[in-house]
Amino acid sequence: MINVIIFGSPGSGKGTQSEKLVEYFDFEHVSTGELLRREIHADNSLGRTAKGFIDKGQLVPDELIIDIIDELLIDRSPCSGIIFDGFPRTIAQAEALDRLLARRNAKVDIVLNLNVPEEMLISRLLNRGKDSGRSDDNMKTISNRLKVYYEQTAPLADYYRKAGTLCDINGTGTVDGIADEIRKAVDTVRANYPECNKAPK
Ligand code: AP5
Ligand code: MG
Image (tube, rainbow, N blue to C red):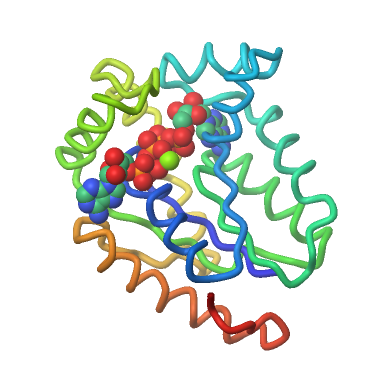
């Protein structure tokens, strides 16, 4: 199982590029943000708890997120790849992911770090906020999401740089140009999994 993390600040293009990767490779896209928004839509207890944090631009507690991922990894076919989007977001989540994958004889293979300057992030998110319906796409919450990102999530880049899996990607070009760069980076990892080397879609 190939495990790809798509990493970057709010608005850096994680979701957009995950969709491109899924179109090309036989990978599953796991976005913790999307999973939580589904729970909110279902108006269940997890959703109601998550909404309190998301609307303030804060992170949902690690235990809740780690449980979601643990459950999701059950019964995964050993050959498929997963793109983790928006997870992990704290050192505790990264360590938990390493443990959960090790139990399945797998590991994080590559971390795609999308680099985008802050003014571009804000303009993308405000623009999306006009019709996304996302309760966190407003200036006040965006400011807090960015603050939380710098304080709690950005340090993970060093965690993965030390592990030798971080791959810096310039996230400011066109969607297709960035997708090409990402595809090339992921291809170098796929070469390590000949048994999984199905022809791309
Ligand atoms: P999440 O849903 O993960 O949101 P996020 O990280 O804030 O990032 P976004 O989804 O807003 O941006 P993106 O990087 O996916 O960019 P996108 O492709 O959409 O998390 C939301 C909340 O859930 C968190 O704040 C937290 O509360 C909670 N949560 C989630 N995971 C958690 C976890 N693991 N632990 C704890 N809490 C968690 O692009 C943005 C816009 O830019 C789009 O309009 C897009 O069309 C446009 N765009 C993309 N690429 C380009 C480009 N190259 N050029 C021009 N425009 C572009
Ligand atoms: Mg997203």
